[in-house]
Length: 165
Length: 241
Image 1: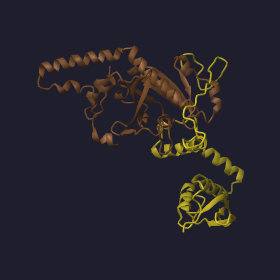
Image 2: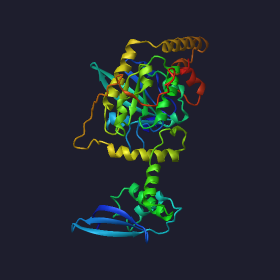
Image 3: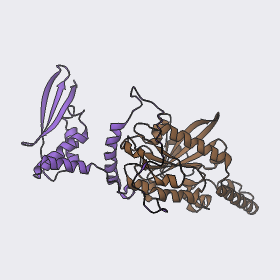
Image 4: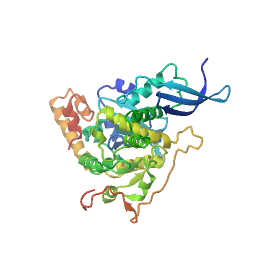
């Protein structure tokens, strides 16, 4: 029988390294804890791959179904930062930096893999803000006026010269 | 995909001369949200919802979205042309612009570079289609709503209409496309593009000559406007001035 569980919280333990999941067993409605040891992970490991491996691990798979891959990847990044001797604040800042799009970067010039990485960063925000058509309050045609009068502040992207944009 | 297989090497652009047909092209950098990326819908999908099957024409690196609209009680068949990675070369094949009746030019309000590159896109557009209506689209306003209170000189200086939209939450997407269709139709009705006239003249001239020389090969003339990627010369001659 397939086990049904509702993920509540997911975190990381540094020593010994493990991903810890707090979940609710639907049959009993009681909080439980699952400790999933992290093996073969060094400060040089790829966090995305580690997250994928754990998520697809046959023993943990059904428990981690509701935990987004992104969150697991982030937890592995926190662990890796710890292995490098960084403070939590430093690691969080680094994660934030890595997950931010450089507005000056020309994505037309990237290869497929790098472009896919940038797109996945943008997807995260898209999904957060997305109104899907099966949402109960979905409206197909939404019109909002944004008047462009003279009082507006410049976007800051236009050059000063009168001939250029 | 199926359409691609049925017509493997030609794309009929002659139909855009028919009264009830319009062609609208999309321009802009990679990842500005023009159309679908893996599972994330773009502006195109947000407008068309489920009622479509886009055609992937991989030979041309483009995606074709067919749509039926009603403008002033008349049925209009709209083909939206979208790039499929071709924009990475910062330039589109001439046939992409050929016979287009309107252009939707998109940038991402979170990425300055996509705004700066609008001028490159615009220059290329005007090289091929000096007169067609062009709409500037500021996409992803859900990511930074403050950008809607800023002024953007690019659109203002060229007196182009500008729309603030979000493919994610749907803001102004339907309005954008409906207005683009309306502009395309009115362009088609009211202005005969100078380039079109010249090309038409050239095509007729060509046809007459060919008929004289090869009276048994009448098909030649009508295949002129089709695109054959294998014979690059022919497709270029159809669209280049």
